[in-house]
Image (cartoon, rainbow, N blue to C red):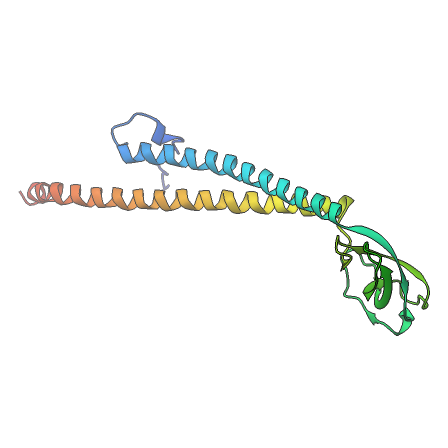
Length: 199
C-alpha cells in the first residue's frame, strides 16, 4: 500500500509582523526588539570601532611626535651581544650597548637593537623620547595601519556583540514571560476541555 505524504508545512516568514489571531502583543514587541537590536549593534559597533581607530591613530601620531631618531655608536661588538626577541618584521637584531647624546647634550649609554656582527664604533640609529631615553621606534606605514584597523575591528565586534547579548537577554526574558502567560491561560482553559472530553 502506497504511503501518502502530507503536504509539508509552509514556513511563514516575518509572521510576527503580520496580523493574525495567534500573534500576541509580546510577539510584535519581540520582532521590534530584534530589529532594533540588529540596527543598534551595527550603528553602535561601527561608531565605537571608528572612535577606537581614531584614538589609536592619534596615539601613534603623538608617539611619533614625541620620539626622534638619534645616531648612536656601539660600545661593544655586536657578535658578543644577546639576540633580540623575534620581532614581527623579523629584523633578527641583537641587543648591544650603545652611546648617544641626549637633547640636553649629556652622553648616555644603554642597550639597543643593532645589526648582528656589527663592531664597536659602528654607528646605529636609535630612538629617543623627549627626555633622551631609549624607546622603540614608533610604528609607521603598514604596521601602523594594521594596528589602527585591528583596534577598530576589535572594538566594533566587541561592542556589537555586547549589544546583541543585551538584546538576547531581553528577548529571553520576553519568552519566559510569554511561556508564563501561556501556562496561566492553559490553567484557565484546561478544566473546560477536561469536562468536554469526559462529558
